[in-house]
Amino acid sequence: MVGVGLIVSGCGAPVADVQAAPEATDPVCAEAMVSLPDAVAGFDRRETDSQATAAWGEPSAVILRCGVPVPGPTTEHCVTANGIDWVTRDDGEFWTLTTYGRSPAVEVLFDDTRAASSSVMVDLSSAVGRIPATGGCTTSAPTQAPIPGTDAPSS
Image (spheres, helix red, strand yellow):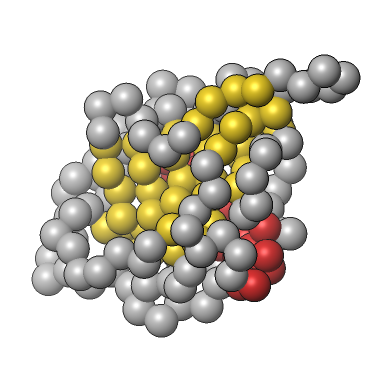
């Protein structure tokens, strides 16, 4: 798990402590960050303490970091939602979505007991779509693996 914690500031609401990604200063991240929604999966956006990061919910249910390493070819589950391709991973505690075919990559960690992946992906698609696609998911047959946080198989 990336450095995700909580810091309480002296005069305001809690600020989410999120470790910045290695390429957080990439100007393309700034374009995506200014387009992030005020709410994701029904959770309100909170302030974070690092560049190119965002958090929704208190405690955080969804954490976003722009500028993570771009995933190379992978056999991990890849799903397309609203024109954005995501590699999905379950580490047992949180789900991780990482954009596939976009540079810099965006990573989203979320608690699937509080936020459905379909809502997370749809709510973030407009902002993440500001990062140009240079590739995407490929598959020889439709996958039957479920999208995290849903009961229906993806296609």
